[in-house]
Image 1: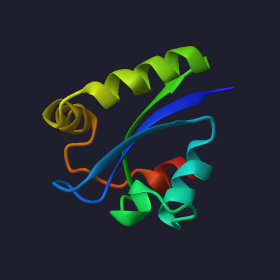
Image 2: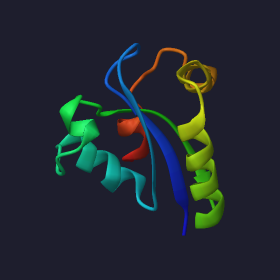
Image 3: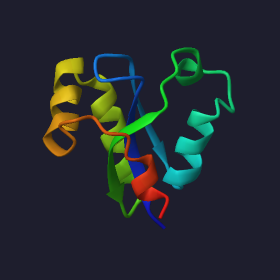
Image 4: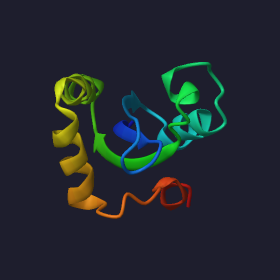
Length: 95
């Protein structure tokens, strides 16, 4: 089983959210339809802009905790390194 650490954004300079899941397509879809009243639904954070894949949950959880402690500028640099246009990657993971 794979585990995913991901970053969602409302827009390029908007709010961002770091999360973890074992089913990235399902979890991003839940954010997109605002299935749960939360930070992401309140601020319309629905665009998948970055993710990493891990083989074990311990590593994924450690990475998520690390990223949550990062400054915003570090997170935006991480996103820009692989997704400079901040494109929504959701469609690319649904195939």
